[in-house]
Length: 45
Image 1 (tube, rainbow, N blue to C red):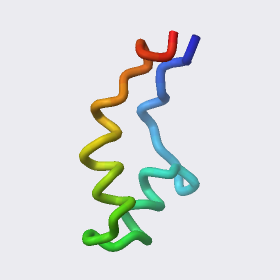
Image 2 (image 1 turned 135 degrees about the vertical axis):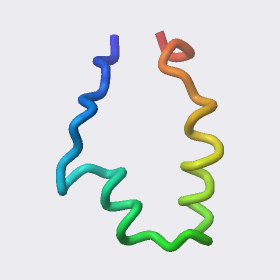
Image 3 (image 1 turned 30 degrees about the horizontal axis):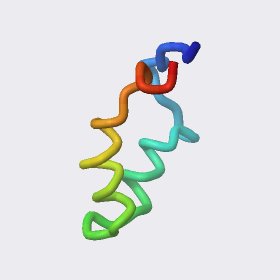
Image 4 (image 1 turned 180 degrees about the vertical axis):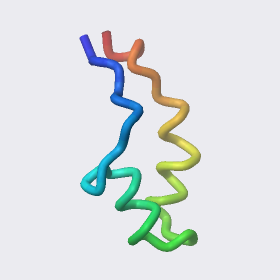
C-alpha cells in the first residue's frame, strides 16, 4: 500500500524542481499538470 505523501517539501522535492527548472510550455509539465491528477493510487491496489 502506498504511504500518504508528506506535505512538507524540500529542496530536493520533484514538485519544487519541476516548478523551478521546467518551462511552462513543456509537454511533460503539461502532462503532469493535466493527467497526473487523474491517476489515483486506488487504481493500483
